[in-house]
Amino acid sequence: MTDYNKYGRELDELLKLRYAPIAIKLLKTEDDIPEGSLRPKRDLGEHLALCQAFAMVRRQRTSLVLLKEDHWCVWPLISFGLVEFRKGEDYYDQVVSINFIEDPQKAKEFFEKNYPRLENGGNIGLAMAPLDTCNFEPDLVLIYARPAQLRNMVMAVKFKTGELLKSEFDGADSCVYSTIPVLKTGDYRITVPDPGEYERALTDEDEMIFSVPAAKLAELLDGLKKLSDRGFGYRQLFMEMKLDFARPQFYDDLFKRWGLEQGEIWKR
Image (cartoon, rainbow, N blue to C red; front, top):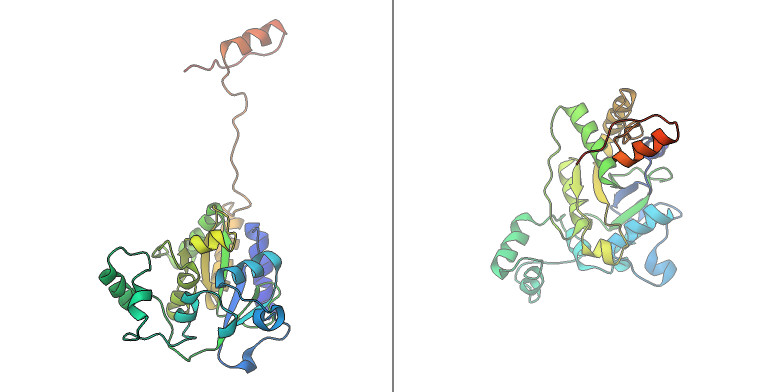
């Protein structure tokens, strides 16, 4: 895990992140469960929404495993294929018609055509840990970042690929949109934290989620480093203050009285 742990330390150094990048791995069998991970239902007797699990990892630096019995929100269970959820079941229409689309028929069409999902039975859960200490090989990494930090990662992607980063945005289900499309396509993605992130996982209003496929971490880091070497890294950019700025007339009058230099007069 040395390379991934090193990437975690380098991301923190280059971007001055508030919280740890989150390494995430799909678990196929119980043999894949990393040692030393907290399992909420077994170890705490309680459950977590996936957004809360992300918050515990990035803020408290907890290593977690979430299997089906650990979840407290329906959408990750559905999207990661941990439960049966099929068209034609008695509760199907009721559930998919409430997902923030006014027209129930359009809501059902959206779910069936656009909602990110993995096949049922393909995995048993998720392992997650801070990237700089994870003891498993991740499938993807989530970075909760300020817009200015996000800007530098977007710049790094363009610098390395010669292309603009493309993403789609929804105001809901950020735990799903930040993970499933990345696992399926292997592409970078930007996600807006949803109401659950804000209300239950205490995500700040100035945070966005940047998703990185594990296979592209080296590319992202190389872009960030080279931009930094050219003076365009997050740590090199700063707001520049104008010195000897223009001031109201009475400032100059007083400075003249006191034998001090005068300057440009501020005019509105």
